[in-house]
Length: 409
Image 1 (cartoon, one colour):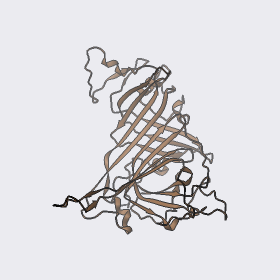
Image 2: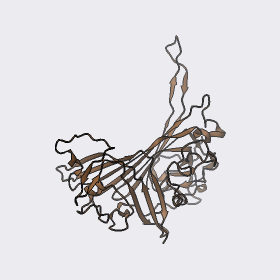
Image 3: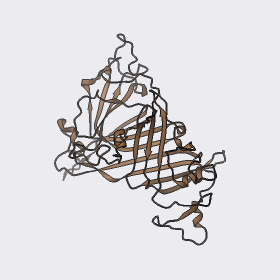
Image 4: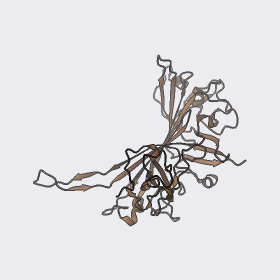
């Protein structure tokens, strides 16, 4: 590969790299990396390549002179912030959401297998293209027209047919961050597409309305679409009658949602699918999702009291419980809530006006089959820190719907 820059870089930093992506639900070959979408809000980017090999036994010799390589693996990790005009990296399209084709394993969404079905749908895969430009410009495309060498030169690398390995969302007080991990076996240097003007780069520097905790309707007294388990309200709601759905939940500081997706691959003896130049898109042909998809949610907030879920441990009762049985904890109004059951509904909804003054609704829906797995306390140190409680939930139903929908007046 010949570097396109007349003057070599002194370093690579955030202002001279950008990420583009192209998604598909089919086994197709990359044609033009410039036909990709710029990924907004990227805060950090990392790549790693595992080129594993093993030396072969050579009987009678102490020096092994032969090496056998295994299938290579490339991993891409991206962290970004979400704003009102952007969309989550993986999401359900509006038409599929309205038609109730929302399950993550639906053929229009992530899918479940690499082998195309009767409609030619397969696992959702992505081409991730990373651009590198000269470091002496303050941002991409900022060179003076006709006077600056390298102003339109770029190094372009595409990781082809990537699969999502994990997605996580951290909903904090001041922003929502999205972390993405993808993997593939193939990459290519796009020597034929080394001109920056060929790519659809935005106007830099980027701007937008960053989504924050106050965009969620958890604080609304009426009309809230967000749903959290009753024990979350019991410990974090600063009003007394927590059973009432109209009360505010003020103590929640952050919510973390994690999705881990594992894959298996059928053995294809004597053939490394995707190793041929003309058929690299077949690398995922015999790959399928390992079920269930692991979906977890951690809800952290400032504690106003210790969690009364342990009331049932008093007296001479047994301290080991089966989740199939039903045990209750008394709420502030005397009502009992069955907390040790697999029926907790979790749904988070945020709203914000985008750059076109259109109100959009962001949805993270984990279904109603979540169950409590951990209760953790931290903080309360002598420096004046508050005691924080984290309630951890998971579901084995592979339930997660992520969507961005325009709100029709």
